[in-house]
Image (cartoon, rainbow, N blue to C red; front, side, top):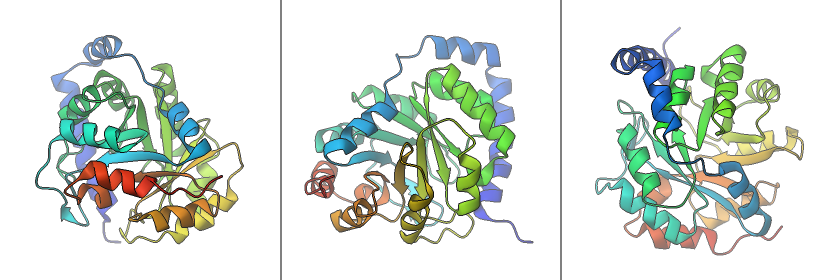
Length: 267
């Protein structure tokens, strides 16, 4: 059986984690996390925003494995400011370097340039990375169910909660959704991109969202490019979104953010 993109990412990420542990010990990274900027309420911000409009997690992403370079003129601080001015609710910042041309420093600088809560967007396998996320001033981490075991997911979630961070649990099929329901975090991200083939279909959100209880906050991810896309999601009860590529490709990120949010389907 041939390796998927996700398999390749996991392989290099586990090696990367071991290198990081040798550079900065767990006790040292914990000290850095303790002195980090106070946690901003990520989940609460999304929950509040979608009551009257849409919750938008605006992503700072330079490149991706499927699309290559997305934005050449890339300044995380200025992009964070542009997103905030445009009405974004939260930030998502890629910290994975090999596949997304991200950097841990991008998270710290983007968050410090705005008042928005920030998600560390990376492939998290080890509780060390969770502590590191807090040390980088992250307010939320991502758990990708396609890439971790149930036990790993529980350990990562527990670690995040112990550092007062929120958790976005990402799924892209029914099996992962069922597994995610055993975790406590209320935020479920439905990724319209199949992480094994990298093909995208918004039907994934439409299908899986109907299987979730009302107390879960659903965030649709990937393949969202226009206000019409957001309205089609809102018609099935999904009012929060993680959007990166379509905004990153615009010359004026503030105007693009305002435009995609300006005409929400009212609850």
